Length: 178
Image 1 (cartoon, helix red, strand yellow):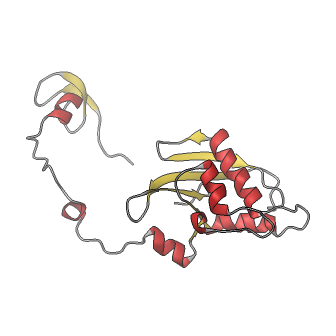
Image 2: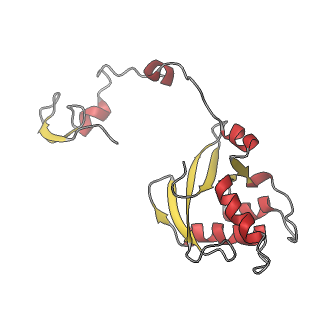
Image 3: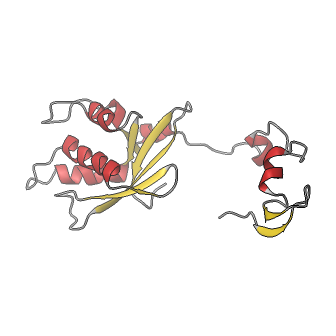
């Protein structure tokens, strides 16, 4: 929840009538360096030392995330999962264990003859053509996955962020996951 209060008043510096953030108009807030705002404030100075952290690499090692950028040939498929992902997105993609479980459930259903690569292609394709933009980093979309034990389309969330070394990465998850 954003705790900044917006109000209509006069700016503390230029006395201009404006919507204020922290008592200043947007012009003064962005252009005034002497507002007791240090140029380089680090996170530990603001929040204190980190108590605990959990990296993307640790999540992959623990099985919380499944790294698709390292997967090779799928059973019954001619190409690699990693190559398939690169056809849709240039950044590495990982997905949550719950999404991987949905894919495995569909692959394990003998009535559908689905493959992991086929399902992933459908998911990644739908993320590009049927997306609902939530914000600059997040999109929502739906996919029908035959054999996944659901009659309705499954909702997914694709989030762009940074990896452990600051590189751009994508994470595919269910809408209620972080």
